[in-house]
Every structure is written in structure tokens, then in C-alpha cells.
Image 1: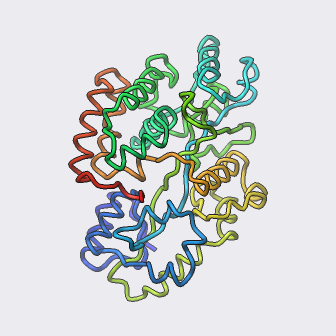
Image 2 (image 1 turned 90 degrees about the vertical axis):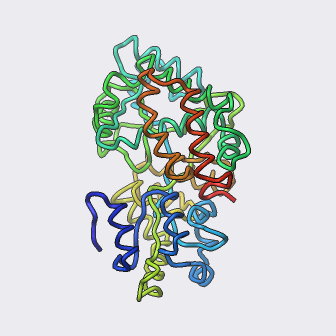
Image 3 (image 1 turned 135 degrees about the vertical axis):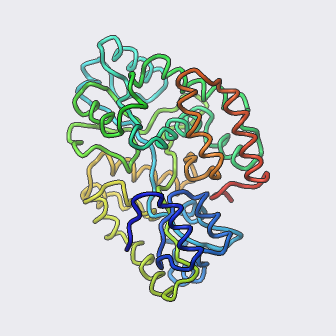
Amino acid sequence: MKVLASAARERTVEALEAGTGPDIVMVPRAGDFVSLASRGLLLDLTPYADRHGWGARLLAPALRLATVDGRLFGVPRSSETITLLFNPRVVEELGHGAPSSLPELEGLARHALRRGITPFGAGCADMPESCELLWTLVLNHYAGPAAVRAALRGEIPWTSEVFVAAVDCLRSWFDRGWFGAGYFDDTVEQGLERVVNGAAAMALAMTGMLPADHAGLGTVPFPPLRDQVATPLFVFGTASLLGVNASSRAADAAALVLDALFDRDVRRRFSARVPGDWNIPLADPDADALRAASPGIFADAAIGLTRAVAEGRYGYATWSFLPPKAEALVVAHVRPLADGRMTSRDHLTELHSVFTAESGGGTSPGLD
């Protein structure tokens, strides 16, 4: 195995194009993965999926993320979602419980600010692209998964009023100081550490980026931001996808390596050692064993996500479902939106233009 510390995407593409890449490759974004598959650089794994029964063992939306023209070219190495992490001691001292609705969330944030406590411990300086999780969260939890899906399918425009209101909601959180003053200057770890030490009440946490010191923390599904959005709601996405080099001389062996990953014992081991980072998207939530093997702040979210996806009630992580240029635009626009240098409507107008041109009016990655 070769680890590419910098320019990983570009170097992976160059190696695949030259026919010198490894047998198994890992690509960070579904849009990029689908692009490589469409260019013939990745092996069609459909025969292996049929032979080994991957369709029954893995979550269907996870498989669809790497499906092109009905053929499977890879599999996500993880399922991930956004959870509301909180410090129970701080929340209780503020006279609240874990929020389950927008009024409860706003009340907790308001009381935290009065006490000099930051509502959301957060930062993105070390991972600037992680600001996208804020955008993903408000769109799904305000507009609702049905609206997001419709926009991804090209059935409604991104300029729809419900999306404008959703982005306005995010902007208002920055305006009211919910993220403190250093969101774009502090690291992810620094933001989470504020929740651990009580300087912040809550955090919008990815299941793949949880604090090492988690003993005193709790987690709940993030509450809906409108009454029309059902709860509990879990956004579904993946950190990266695994595929086999189309030039591989050991395709059968590479496919067997992937097959060996799709096992409950393997996921339990990953969940015990690196909870969240390799949450293999198995259809079986394996709830009791997962809770026994891993910390509750990861296990509860992972089990809830698996059940939600299996039942078809989940949101869409834009880093997995938006095509590459549209996703890059979202990342680039979060800061000017937060700083008040861009309006929600102007942002969504540009997004709609880029998305429409890039998708050609067709369905985004991972949608049937």
C-alpha cells in the first residue's frame, strides 16, 4: 500500500491513466469516483458483487454511489453522518436537556451566550472543506431530504425559496455568534476540545471526526429546523470509495480483499480502534456488538444511520451526492456567506448554474 500525503487525487488519477496505479484505489469523493469509472479507469465489479452477494450485505444507497449505467465500480469504505455532540454537565447547568427541536436548540444557544459559553465548538482551519458539513446539515434539516433529493435530480431549482431560507438559517447562526469568533482560524480538534472542557455546549460532529477524549460527552440526532421535517433525521454520506484499477492483473484477489472487508467482525474491530473512520456500510446494524465494541457517541449515531438508510428515511451529504464542481463551489462560498459578503440567493443562483451545466440536467451520483 502506498500513502499519498499530498495531491492524492491528482497522483491517483495520473497513476490510473498511466496504468501504474495500485490494484485497489481509494477516492475521496463520489463525484470524482464516478468520473474515473466513466473514463474506464476502474474495473466493473458487478460480477463480483453478484457472486459474493454484496447487494444483500451492504446498504443499497452506498452501492448506488459507485454505480454507473447499472454497473458497480466500487464501494464506500464508510457510512458517515452528522451528529449533535454535547457536554451534559454544561447543558444541565444551563437548565436544558439535549435539544430535540429548533426552539430548544435556540433556547440553549441563547442561554449559553448569556453565560459566556460558545453554543457550537467548531473549527475548520486544518480541513477547510469540512465547512461543507454545515451547509449539508441546514439544507437537509431545514428544507428536508425530499427537497434536497428533488434538487439533486434536477426536478426543482437550487434557488427554491426553501433552500434560500435554509442558507439564511446558517448565516444567522454565524451572525448570532453561535460558532464563536474563530471558526475559520481554529482546527476541528480545537473546536471539539471546547465541548470537552466546557467552553462550548455543543458541536456539529462528523462520525468520522470525534474527539479522543469523549468520556463525558453525549450525542443525539440533530433536531429538525422546521416542523415539516421528520425526526430523527440522519444525513448519509461516505468519506471515500474503494475501487479496483481497470489495469489490475490481480482483479480476482483485489475483489476478494474488498469482500473480506464486508464482515461484522471487521467492522467491530475498526469501530473499537478507530471509531467512525471505517464504519463499513453493512446492512446489518449489529447494534449490541457495536455498542459493546465502540464508544456510545459513535455507536448510537452509526446504528441510527444504518436503520434510517435501510428504511429509506435519510438525508443527502453533499460531499457524496453533488458533482465535483458544484461541491467545490459550496465549499468556497461558506465563508463569504458567514462573513455577510454574499447573500443566500446569490450563492444559490450560482450553484444552480454550475450544477445544471455539470450534471447536464441528469441525476447526481448515487441516486436512482
